[in-house]
Length: 315
Image (cartoon, rainbow, N blue to C red; front, side, top):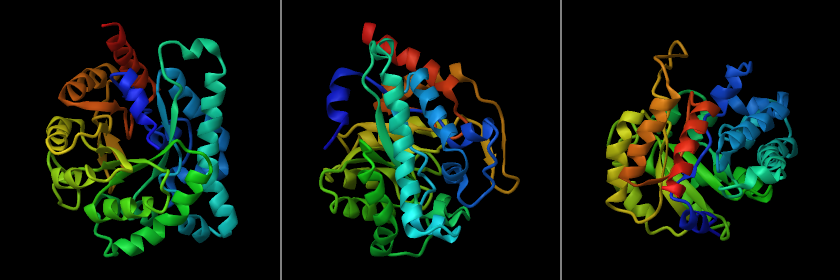
């Protein structure tokens, strides 16, 4: 039920992958679309599989699927049937599994590392809306309505064989509660719950991360708790807030450190893989056990991060 337990007993850090969508953009995809990276499931699935493979080759112990913005409603709005939409959601997992299996087939890839996991991305309801509300959380929906939205995609992702779910970039407490309630309908499933934070203490909707983490500590199917798609400078305080109220592993995968302008839809600033890995040492020292990257991080970031993480085994 919890694939993290045995791995974290053997390895001090599990290295997650880096950005998928911005990496696809870097490789030529135009994601100016309400489906965002999910459109590549239709247009260029082989490229998604290659990005997954490249992250495994860089040292990632876990791939996060291209299903963040993949939803039944989103695909059907594009004109696809219900069956076609569910197949695309399942495809996101199948591509990551195929990349993992191809990578692991080579015996030299198995040295000093675990067989990688595949975490099926479950983005927030606001990602489907594609109006920026994923960074506000002000949907105006009830827990039951959020459960109804997420139910078919969770079923499809789990049916496709994901090792666990990555419920990520969650901006509000109500959506986390809805997802945990929904998980009870899939009793063998497990998920990490990762929030997006507006500052060093609060979700974008305003709830303290500590309040959410304390509640999740009592939910057995939530197997790790943390933050992603957040500025790296906020992580030490956020990790400390979560660690104070939960004994569960802490997961963090922040953005590269660059700044996004949602009006102009452009990134500014610079990102340095070595500096990112140096910061990761502090996140680990603060208590994080699953560490990776979100927007604008690349296989180079993960390669540098993984080199440090592997050094902990010999140290």
